[in-house]
Amino acid sequence: MNTAAREGTWEFAALSVFHDAHYQLALTWLTFALDLSPRLGAETHLLIPYVKSLRDASELLTDVLFAHVNFGGQISYPKGDLYKNAALCHLRYVSGLKIGMQIGMQIGEGVDLGEGYVGEATEKAREVVEIFVEHFPDDENVEIFRSFLGGFSENQPNVKP
Image 1 (cartoon, rainbow, N blue to C red):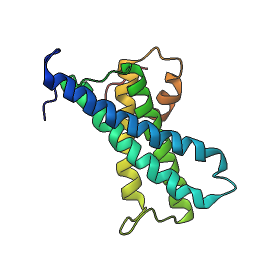
Image 2: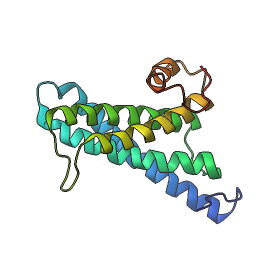
Image 3: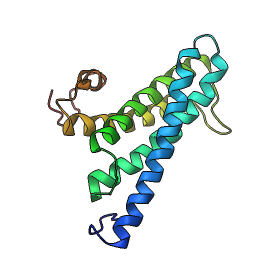
Image 4: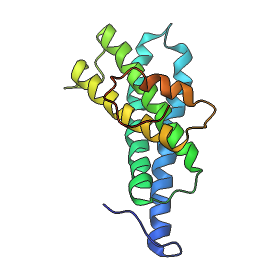
């Protein structure tokens, strides 16, 4: 769906509210997960809500990010915050999935937390992180994201180090 609308139109305003609402909900889930993070080592039962929150946040952040990147989707927040939060969320989500896979965690009925599921999440994370690195190569934390990308084969798309 093309989410571009001319500034000043009701469509522009409606899309701005729509994207802002999704962004805010994603940030709520991301914040919840980050608040759980320090307790995960001692309370492994918190890994399930941690991973589910990151899953939901990463899906919404990806939708808003792609709307912005591909169609000029409107958002009233700084573009850099959106891109970086999406990349951070995906990295945390993949990390949580890998830990969950190691301990045999089930995140929902019919969700097999196997290599395929984690692989799909990792590929989506790679795509989002590449977008962040491409658009914000001078970000103060870009090396963290580049190190994630460095874990892939040399066939990765053109991301400038």
